Amino acid sequence: MATNWPSSRLSVEVEVGYLVREPIDTAALVDAVSGPLLGGTVLFSGTVRAGPDDGPVIAIEYSAYDQMAEAECARIEAEVVERWPGVSLAFRHRLGRVRIGEASIGIAVAAPHRAEAFEVCRHVIDEVKVRLPIWKREFLDDGETRWRSNAPTTTES
Image (cartoon, rainbow, N blue to C red; front, side, top):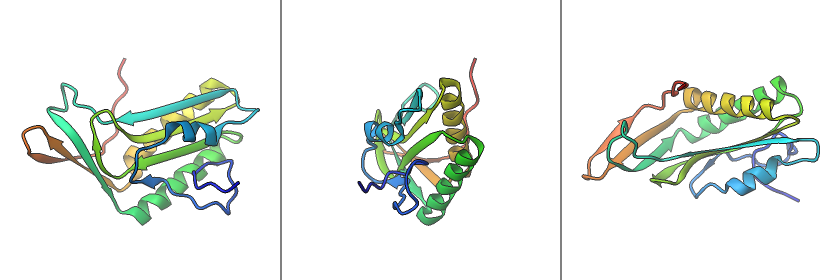
């Protein structure tokens, strides 16, 4: 059965598309990584928020250098496959306008054990934040817009 979900379990004949302009189907990401030898599955869904440090954000518009971002996503996936053999990975990053509460990124990782699945998921989101040529323009509730960096966040205790 042909699919276009990026996943380390899929054949090289499958067209990979990491960037999407429609809502991210997290259930399909989990389905793409599931397997009988994989006992720990982690799903990360990064959603647009208007937290106390973010101000009155109502949406974020994501834009990218698509071709370069797709290639970098493929490199991240290849690194995961090499570093963590036996782990299955699928992820998507949304482009366009994404409203509060909607997912801008979805990452699914399945591994033989949970610790490895969590480790890989954390690695992927950190690498995406640092390496992808994706830009964020925030739309505020007063009609203003502002550009925001895609810098990685720090780990909180």
